[in-house]
Image (cartoon, rainbow, N blue to C red; front, side, top):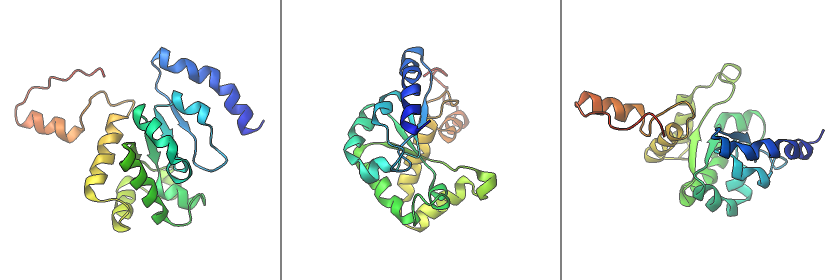
Length: 174
């Protein structure tokens, strides 16, 4: 069964998720062969969606208005041959930041690739793909879009508030 046939089979179930309040992630737009725009409106997180800012930047305003997040795994793209050089990610980050699209920096197959998030952060900073302020924005976005994290703020902000004896007024429900 081809990818398009699979996408057509997934679409009916995926379209029920927003009404059912189910969190959704889909790995789309990682490669040029994995582009299914009809599935985008039903996803909260888009795994590996780097082809959107690289080749379909006209979709970025739609992602921003829907509050969607791209999951970007830098080392994976080099290991899989999706990108030849990590510096190709600069345009991904630049276009997403300009359009207001959140990015969560992630890592795949940590055991297989022997890569952890600090290494991904260090590479992105060392190659001047992002700066420290952008790294913080990505970290904040990662918590904001995490399905298992029930708060609007990052852990450091919550801990700082507790240490300064500020009451936690936000609800655990988003």
